[in-house]
Image 1 (tube, rainbow, N blue to C red):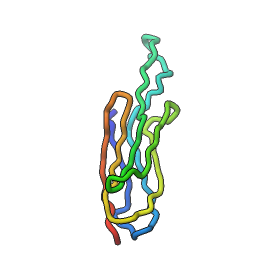
Image 2 (tube, rainbow, N blue to C red):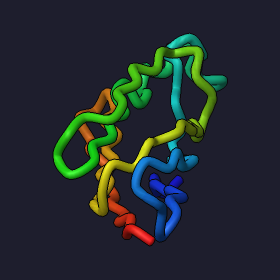
Image 3 (cartoon, one colour):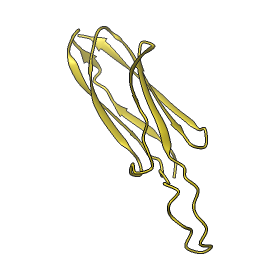
Image 4 (cartoon, rainbow, N blue to C red):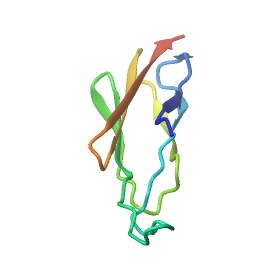
Length: 108
């Protein structure tokens, strides 16, 4: 499975407007509870353990998902837009892989 982040951010917003931000990443989110059918050995845990969002370098939100989160986790939240700028999204998994994507918001 290719691990691909996708986000939906409005291209423009008014100063002070609350906008809906949506983020999804294709990730297997293996809980560590299942066993391999052939060998019977436990499949190691491999989840997204941190999801961070910053706006113009300032923290907006940080989530710490646990093993009960489904495969390909989806997050959504509202952001009150203070100015034009760039949202940076970062996912970190148990293997140390980091997945990042950025989107800009202009003021209308």
